[in-house]
Every structure is written in structure tokens, then in C-alpha cells.
Image (cartoon, rainbow, N blue to C red; front, top):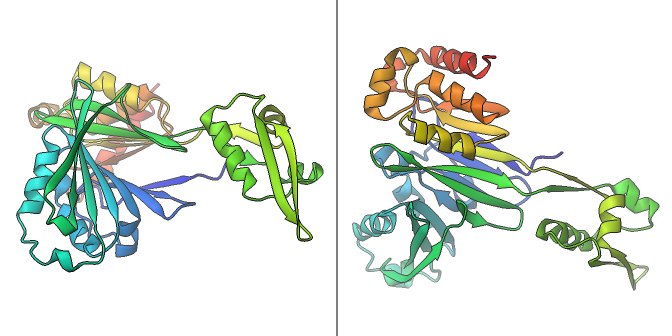
Length: 336
């Protein structure tokens, strides 16, 4: 299966958190957390459509200004999500600058900010560049079963964690991955073309097997078409496999409640990126600071059944000793 999404940490394990997920077949990316963005090129930054901020401690949100500056003068709509109070915080950040000349821009860079509450409510507002980023268009909606964003090919799910403040954990879940077997198409006398996109969408929507599917193409200047049931094409030319799952967990107290939420969110993840701020010999300090130890992170990754686990967000006190944190996590992850 060719992966649709490519996740990687934008900084080293001792630096600001941030997970960049590139959409390999689209000019698009999403970002989990908004720390220092210096290592991302403008081209990569401009691919970002949605940003999911765990909480607004400075190392998770300092990149906001850099991104705003880059997007000014561009026709772009950027969606940001964060915990309760986030919409006001975005508004305050924007209000700290003077915008008296933005009416001269021919484009209208827009920020859509959404804040999430533990009771399932979500509140949003828009900030338009050409209106001086004044707050407008307040809205609200319900988040059902933790699903914050639900698109054709994937969804983003959230969990609420305790870090003395609310901290959000995120998971990107690709919907079923639909592969086209081109040799089977050839055997049926069918060409590749735009119609295959509609076929994939019908599968991802969950259309019934009796749903009609139209194959159309041009041949020697003439339009051709054939009709099939979705069930026949699924059985003869498609291979449907589970999609990728990418989980991101940071800044969490090791408690029974947090552990249960992390394990549920990251269940069977292909990639789990999880903070490992302290060594387990300093578990008391980790508890005081509401962070995980490397061993705790490894235990949670094993309990979740994650396939790959990547630690990050190391305390600077361990500078030069990152291998110890990595080893402690791996030992706990591989325990049987």
C-alpha cells in the first residue's frame, strides 16, 4: 500500500513540539502543534490547511506569528483548533499588531479559529485580514465521539488530557485505502481516468453494493461509457485495506484517566508520537510537572498496540543523553 500521509517531527526531541503530516498526493499538509517553525520552508508552511494546537504554552504556539506573517497578502484560509479559550487567545495575538494598511491587499487571508470544550461543544470565529482581523462570524457545533474533522479520505479525532490545564491529543485516521488493480481494469477493457475518482469516493462514502457506477472515457474522439454495480467493481478491480493511523500525545500527567484516554486514542496506531520528557528515575518530578517519563510513554504505546513509537519533547536537562530516553522507552515498549 502506498501511504497517503507522511508524518515527521519538525524539530529535534529537545526542541519545540510539532508534527507535520504531508499529504503525498495533494498540495496540502496539516500540523499538530505550532511551536518553532524555523525548520519548515515557506513552501511547506503554505501547504498547511489545518493546525491542531494541544494547548497554548509558548513552546506549542510560538510559531503562530511566523505563519501569519508568511500568509499575509495571500488568498488563503487557515483553520486552527485548540482548547477552551483558544478563540480569544488567537484574537488577542492578532490584536497586538496594527493593521491599518491591510485594505490594500487584493487578497483576504482568513483565519478560522475553533475552541473545543470537554462537554462536546465547539465554538468558532473568523478573522479576516482585510477587516483588520476583527473577530466575526461566531459559530458553534457539536463534536461527536471525539471526531473534530471528517473529510472524504480521513478524520481527525481528539482526546482531552490533564496537564494542570486542558491539553488536547490528536489522531489522524485515514479511511479505508482503495487501491486500483490496473491489470484487472485492462482485462475488463476499461481505461484509467477521472471516473476512478468517483469510484473511490463511492467506496469511501459507504455506498451499497447495488449502487450504479458509470465508467466513461474518450476513444478515437468518441465518448464511451459502461455501467457496473459498485459491488462488482469492488470485487474485481479494487483492493480495500485499512488506512493509516497517526497519533500525537504531548504534555500529560501520568494518571489512570489520562492513560485510558491515550490508549483509546492511539489504539493500533501505525505511528505514535508521544512525549517522553523525563527518565523514570525522576517519576516524582514528572508528576509534579504533569509530564510523562520515557518508561510511562513506552508502557502506554505497548498498551495501545502501536506499531511504531517515536519519543519527543525531552527535558533540556538531558542534553547529550537522548539515547538514554530512547532506550528506556524502547525497553518498556518491547516488554512482554
